[in-house]
Amino acid sequence: MKKSVIFLINGLGIEKPGSYSISIDQSMPQLCKIKETSYFTTAITSSLEYRSAYQRFFLGDTYRSELDFVKNNVLNESLVNNQTFQSLSTAVQREGSKLHIFVEATNDKVVEQLNRLVKALPLDSNKKIYLHLILFQQTVSEYDKLIDVVNFIKYHLDSHMTVGFVMGKEYLPDTLSKNELDYIKKLFFMCSAERWTQTDQKLTILKENNVRPCDVQGFCANNECFISNGDTILFFNTRRNNYDNLLQGLFQMAPEVFKTSADIPTYSLLKLNTQFNIPFMIENVSYENSLSGLLTKHNKKALIFSDNQNIKLVNFYANGMNDVNNPSIGFMLKDDKLYQKEYIEQLIENAPYDLFIFDYHMDVSKDINHLKEQLSQLDIIIGLLGDVCVNKHSLIITSLYGLKKELPVAEYNTETVLIDYEMQIPIFFFDYNYPKGKYYLSPGETNDILTTAVRCITGDTSLYSLVKEKGIINNLVKAFK
Image (tube, rainbow, N blue to C red; front, side, top):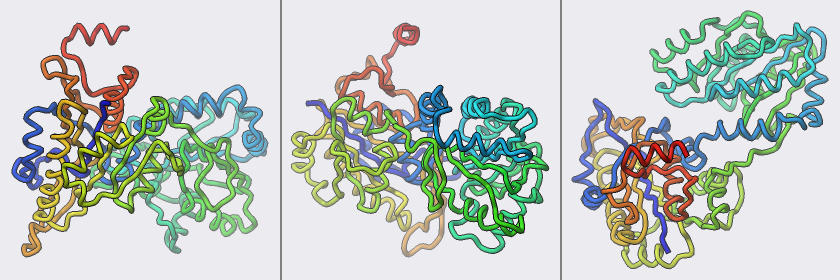
C-alpha cells in the first residue's frame, strides 16, 4: 500500500541577501543526492516560529473557512433565534449608546459578514458603531497586504460603522502594569492616544520603523470612538482567542473612569478562551480541511514524530484547533531508533499508518557549528527515508517556517552572524507515480504541502496539489472544467 512521508526541517529556508551562507550540499550529502532525482520548488511562509507555522500547515487559510462557517451557521436565517444575538439586540437599543466591535484585520471578506450582522440588528438610523482593529500579524512584511485590507474595510463598511482604534494583539502583556492600565484608560475611554485618521500612512511609518503589526501601540482613527458607560462590546472573533489582557484592562479601568459601577454588556461571536463570563453565539468552528478532517474523509491514519513539549500544540492544530485524542492521529517521540534502516523500513511498510510526519527544528541550535552538526544528523534519517520510499512511496522534504536569528559562529568563536531565511522555504518531492517528463512542482503555501501528501495516497483530485501536469492545453482544459 502506498504511503506519504513528510520530513520537516523547520527553520530551513532560502537564504536572503546578507544572510550567512550554510552549504546544505556539504552538510547534507544525502539530501543533495535526493535533490538530483527529486522535484524542487518553494513555498511562501509568513511564519518565523512554530505556533503560527503549525496552524498554517495543518489548517491553511483558516480565516476564509471560518468566515464561510460563520456565514452559513451563524449569520443566517436562524440568527434571530440565537439567545446571545437577542441579548445583543436588546443591549444596542439603549438610547445614546454605541456599539464597539473588536475584530482581527485578516481578510477583506470580513466586511461582508460584519455588514450582514449590522443589518440584522434593530438599529436606529443614528446609531454609532465603532470597529476596533486588532492586528495579529507577526512580520513586518505583512504590512503591504494589511494596508490594503484596512483600506478596503474602511471604505466598504455599512454606513453605521466607522473604524475606531487600532492595536497590536501582543502589545499588552498578560499581566498589566500601572502604565499599561493608564494607557488603556486613555485609549479606550478618552481617545487621548495618538490620532491617525489616515491609517495607511500610520501603518507605512510602522513598517519603516520595523514594528511588527502584533506589537503596535494602540492609536485612534477617530476622535469619538471612546467607550462610554452603557455602551455594548462585541468581539467578532472567528476562533477561540484569549483577550484577557484587553478585557482585564477594560473592566478594571471602567469604574475608575465612570466614577460608578461599569455597565458594558460584552459578547463574542465564538466562545473565547477567557476567565471572564462572555456570552457567545456559537461554541466552535468545524475545520473540514484540517488534518483530522482529511483523514476522516478518506479513512486514513497519520503518525507524527515530535518532541514531547510540542505534541500538545501539534495535536491541537492537527485536530482543527480542538484538544481531542483522535484515534486517526498517533504520536511518537523521536529517538535513536530512527537512525536504523531496519527500523525505518519496518515502520513505513508495516505500521498501520498512511501518512508519516517527522517534525524537527533548526532554531534550537546554539551556534553555527552546532546547526551544521544538527543538519548532518538529520541527513542520516533523510537518506534512510529516501532508500525506503524510492519507487514505493511519496516523500516530501521541506520546512514550515524560515529562521531569522543571530548566532555565534562556534562555541569558541563568539562573533555573531545573521541567519536570514525569512519568507521562502524549499520543497523537495519525489514520487514514482509522477515521472519528471510529464509533471512539475509548482510554488505554493505551506498547507498545499499537506494536501499534496494526502492526495498522493488517496488520489482525491479535489485536493489541491503542488504537482502539476506539464502542458498548457492540459491545464487550460482542467481550469475550465
